[in-house]
Image 1 (cartoon, helix red, strand yellow):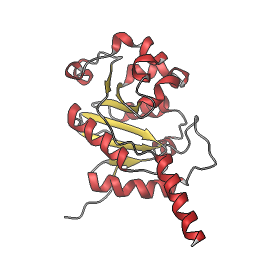
Image 2 (tube, helix red, strand yellow):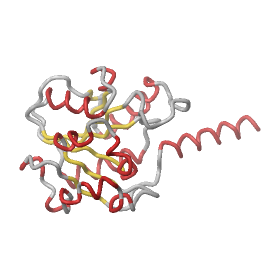
Image 3 (tube, rainbow, N blue to C red):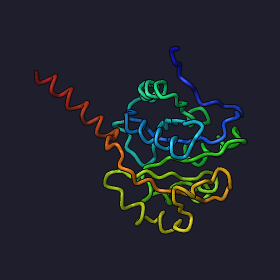
Length: 211
């Protein structure tokens, strides 16, 4: 049976534990898929939401592809792996992750959420809007990233929330509601990044133009 794109529902649903992967997806790639599937497997998540942000406040705008184009690319991966996809910040008219997640929680009161993030956000996380409140809403699943593995142990986030860190076998926040909680997954991951995909694409175009 042919699969169709599953959109993020904007009404209450019986889903229990949901993994949230926010990002500009500029563009989406296999690395996003790998961390989503791993999180779903080891945390026994019921579903994965890919949430495309129109603009990351910490990233430049000049190389950002149009939102519709990013959604189109991401939809191919989402359909293939049965993830849900949506641009919630456009729908909710929100700009910050904290506000978007709070709206999601209001819509899905029966659900528990796990925020899937790369270790590269940790050094600047405490600069985020309402960063400390965000950790009361969702638990964090932190994935190691090239050049940022040390951030898991040395960032300001790690020091501030050292007592909230849990080993994988003790990471069950969806049942205890004992926030804040977070865990680090240092398993070797796909080194692919959106910037490397864009760079390869630009090199391929340059070679064609030379030929």
